[in-house]
Length: 530
Image (cartoon, rainbow, N blue to C red; front, side):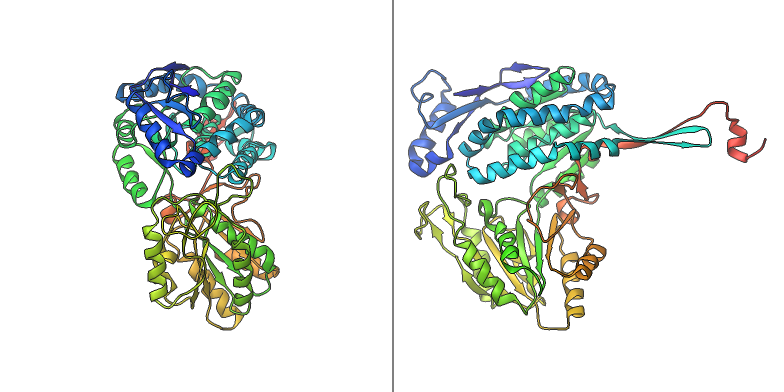
């Protein structure tokens, strides 16, 4: 059984209790035994007990109290000046070092993510995303953004980014380990970072930080304390971060309503809020699109049962191809199935609280939408059941752009395998393009958008006109990762008032200009006098 204490000042520190991880697969096999084991161990956390040796039990993580949270901040603050003073190229070496450890220990990380409930294929996708994030091309681009030099009139001019100081990172429960890995980018910028591992799903996060990021930092020459990891009560930990004079930035990942309220608290406390909130992504399928490939991208909406912020949430379909597109999507949705997260072909995750799914579906159907496929609970084997913990991939046809945003499932992120396909009213193509642009740009959220078309003029027009979102993908996977392009960030309710494509190295640092001259008369520099 894996066991991780808090990681503070480069060493393991005892906590005030433990949270245990039981395998997600066991919850499908024997939910009563699994839940009973977890509760019994957290009441009496004896690692030598019979319960702790049960095959369902994967590991445990220490719970940090207020003293542990404060100690991690003090250690980070003490380490910050020394780490910021390390030359940029030495700090940039952390990226390849971390990537090498990801490659070396990727199988173990995947096992833990699957044990926590991430379907194996999606866990591999997330690992591939991290390998791309820390790949050679991406790291070279980060380096370019961090420092640029010019020569002008005998002067050496520098524009570079300086680390903000102590950054606190709050990963989400739905993808904690890959989100915690963003800490390495913040460290590469020269910050010290403290990460709060989510209490409900802490093990993979602590493994990544302790076994991969921590040793890579040591190899890069970072001082102890540059990275801290605690597993604490979310509300209490965030409040202590806000109250601490040692904290400069808080990187918050969570829901939009909570995140925007937290943004105000950060500003009031003098902290920089970096927000990574909900998405409500749109895919536009134009009349000349490659429909089989477009349908593949559309059905990414159902991966992880829609409980991934960057999957598509609605589709805008050209009326000329709507019927054919819906047929393609329906056929491909049948192949997205539930099951044990370790099974190779499983892409659906359990949905524990599905009442809202059915309320959203009922609202749409009452408003005239048509159920195309899905709409039921299922068991792990795909059998429909009133008590199943999975939901079928569900497609709803909505006719007409006018009024479509009045539907809750279109207006907001749902976090369910529930996809509205909005079929535009017939009109001339130039009119439809204007309506599609307006619809995308009117989205209150702004994570990603996708376009499927063979027309270069349509592509160019979308690039010029669509300002919503941190990323626009064209004729490609909606959720796929690419070097140099952002994996996170966006506008509106996705990123808060300063939302944009989120590169954590840049958002947790600040620009500074430097001019270096020799023998220049200050008076001449100001007035041009000789």
